[in-house]
Image (cartoon, rainbow, N blue to C red; front, side, top):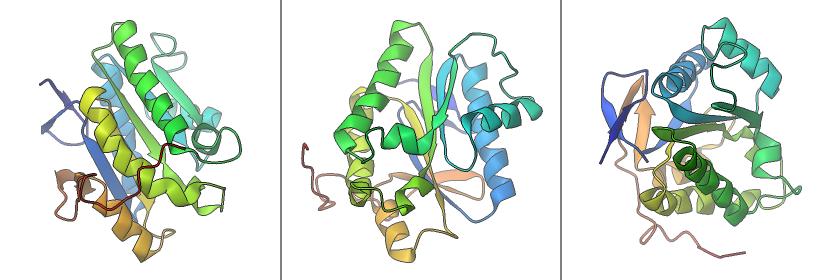
Length: 204
C-alpha cells in the first residue's frame, strides 16, 4: 500500500483515506485545504476541488494568490475545480450512484494518464439547500468507504459546524473513518463501517 502526504501534517497516509473535516475557523480551513491541494500537485496527483463558497474561477485565483496552482497550471487538467452544487447535483437532484461514478472516474483517469494518485475535496454546504436527494448525503458518504477500497482516491469532505446542525454532524462522523482535528488527522472513534452503520444502500 502506497502512502501520500496531505500537506498540512508531516504524517503520511494511505491513498484512499476518507477524512471528515468539521471546522469552525474559516482561516484555518483555507490554509489546510490549500496545503492539501498543493501537496497533491507537488506529488503529481490528479486533484479535484468541488467548491461551494465561491466560483471555480475565484477559487483558482485564490489558490494562485497563495502560490498554489499557478495559472495556467504546469500540466493542463491536473487541477480540476468545479462548482460543488452542479457537480453533486448535475440534474437538479442528488443521486449518490451518479456522484460515486464521478469519483470513481476521477481515480480511473489518474491511472490512465499516469498520475501517482488522485485526491479530491468537497465543500458540502450545497446539502443545506433542500435539493431533492440531499437527504441521501449520509448514504453517499458511507458508500464512499466501499468505493475507495478498490479506487483509492484520497478524500477530504468539508463541513462547516457553524451551518450544519448537531444531528447531521453526528451522522457525518459515523461514516468517516478518519477526522481532521486542529490540523491533525486521527482515527474517528464514532466511525461505523458500512456493514454496521444502518445506512440504506439503495441503488437508485
